[in-house]
Length: 192
Image (tube, rainbow, N blue to C red; front, side, top):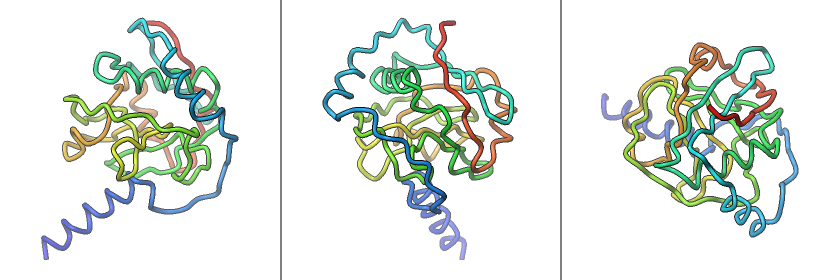
């Protein structure tokens, strides 16, 4: 019986991360640019290593994220590019699983949307602990695009399987209060 519960848990985690779980009300945003042009713009983003993201929640509060450009430079550049273009502004955390993760950044609002292109995986040795920020993806390791998740508790079973690119520095109390459908009013990039 214990094996059955373990299999059910693993299957539900897989469905959660791949975006195959519940469908929600779409909030479609137009794709920002052609795939080739977009991926070239990601490459052009210059990082100083001092960038941080601030997610301002519509219901109040902010979440400050420190990036790991030394471990996931392409992923950090991609997030910075999208944030500077206003891509995340008004999007929701479309999936929240208590004691697991809060996932957002889907332009359709249901876990099936992307930015019109994918980025290569940058699996690294960073562990999934409370406040870890990483890219959501499908079964294809190189299918991440714009969706990200924040761990609500340690998730060591995800280590080395998803691209960890940041950590919550401030606002973990806000992260723990995120409910499904909560809106990111804006995501800004600042220098520390």
